[in-house]
Image (cartoon, rainbow, N blue to C red; front, side, top):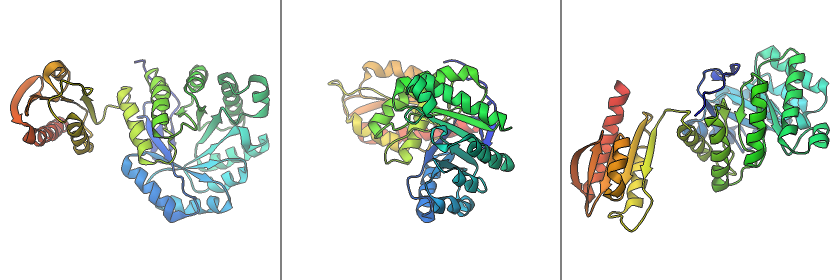
Length: 355
């Protein structure tokens, strides 16, 4: 894993982005933002799931004016997502913690300057959100919907904001496929100091997004690229946060929570492994202490895996053993081992947390 790129640090509300700040996780509500009760309910769900930042759509004037009230009651820093009508950004800037604009549809230089001035007046950042499917016409004509076109759009708009005296910038370069997304971020990273928001746009339903996001975002994170991220999933909220946290964990960029190891199902399994793994996963999901936990269906691989795990189960015929720190601590009947194991995991997590 490569060392993380050092970037200019900005703040969205009380969340630091870039520099040596932890990589933050974002999502977006899908309610009509002017329906404050529904939007607040979705934000609360995201906060409970572990989101750091939330973005809301500003589609009309009622959405824009509702942000003042929504900001008062939101438990998360609020980002206003603006397309086409720059004046909504001017209204939103009075209340929110960040403005996201798409250079491909926000309009003329004068309109972008007005947004920059409004954000400068309140010391809030702007995300330049470049999308492969909605580039400015001049870049689309010259480059097509390519990584090069996305990078040139980002560079042009970064320079534009800098010329307007604005430097609280973060950048995203999203395409709907893995290859273009990764290439664009890789191309731009050495050219600018600003933090990156990672994502694959229009990534699809849970299965499709999980694959695309793991490949693109996980790959970039392991290359040291990325300061904040969203895993876009059609029709989901909590799953976006869960997926992002897992990608951070397995890319090695977040040392938090349980890494669960379980063997594939095969004819050697001597217990109901699927049920056991689901039970363990559910009951230890709240643990934030970094732990390697292994649940294995037979002894073939279990002893080897246990050497690398903090604590492990190796199932046998109607019984199993618990191995902690590479040493067996006991054999237990199949109907009692899970309860003992979960208690041991929780005790180990508490012990590590207290150190």
